[in-house]
Length: 497
Figure (cartoon, rainbow, N blue to C red):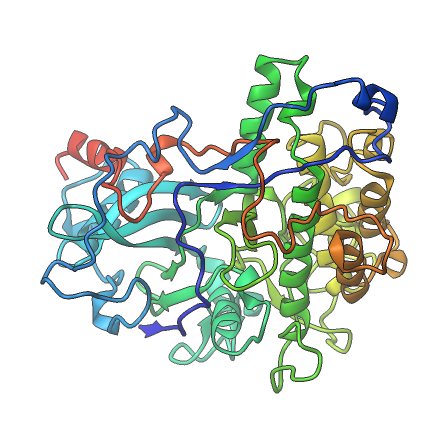
């Protein structure tokens, strides 16, 4: 078991951060004219970026006064610095536990058993996919208040993947020294990457691969929720009041900021650092292959950075990622068969086998342009509130109507569509994309309109327009609060585990 480097500091703010827009933008074609504004047209109601749960309770938990001391009366670090032994492993055998009636219960029992003798506690499930589950682990002080949080990912690898080289870093035949590709990539981002790595979710610790159960475990930073959750909540509110579309949309400056976050995350995966002058030595470029709203997390602003009062997007889930570049002889033939999520794949990730049932002849090499397409599609989904576009499953989920949506500027729409062009050679490059975003959000030449509304530099933004981001109560954990009710505990109790 190993612990990764400590991440860059992040804001530990109260449960809401405020972002706003002060002025009407002339290029918004559906806004009133200057004459109408002068005659007393009222502005929209304020929007708050709120991390509370869906029932309005701040985390669904009971708040407590934050005690600066730990369980032993001594202050302790909020993150990192734990010994390897402090992190629960996966050595417990479910067959030794009370007989379980389903795979879900067996996996829950395995988690619970691993945490029984640990200072960490097993919390509720955050999500599940084809390869495993993600759940919360937390530490409590003597007042039962949360002092530390981690997102724990248990990966259950299929038997045939244990011998498939694309799932490993190192010689797949070397059972002692090979490392799951996800662990290797997250370790590189945590230990080797330079500025900008904070736009990815950091690995705090990893457990060795368990040959008996074909599993491994990752301890990662815990973030507020996913972009998919945020979009889904806005869709729900729009369905409740279809006539109030304007107030339910994400404000444009937020989309610019979030596009910048994802762009910087992808620059780091491709080059190792935002700083072109001092890239990490021997950096191996990474293609994530499965960027989608569900694999993008929303978190607190980064301390000491731009956009100090606007939530940050952070890239996560590197289980389908690869180390590759244009000189890789296996690119694309070994990498474009079945990766990613149907509907969120650019053309080069959709092989002829998937489309026509033919041989796995791909549509070009994978590279940074692959990530560009996926981050553009994710932000377009946020703009359109489109998480499940019907139609051909092998066609990208990109709604061209964004160009005609007068609620967003043509500058944003055209830039996003440069990201999702079918021909990889015609897509905008990551460095150019970042430069265009900065120019449009306060870093451009004199006289250029600031689409960021001053949010890049404002320590605290006015709240004359508000949007609310809410998370499910049973998945909302915050330092300084008591944990919510344990769904897994009820499940285990049903079977006497």
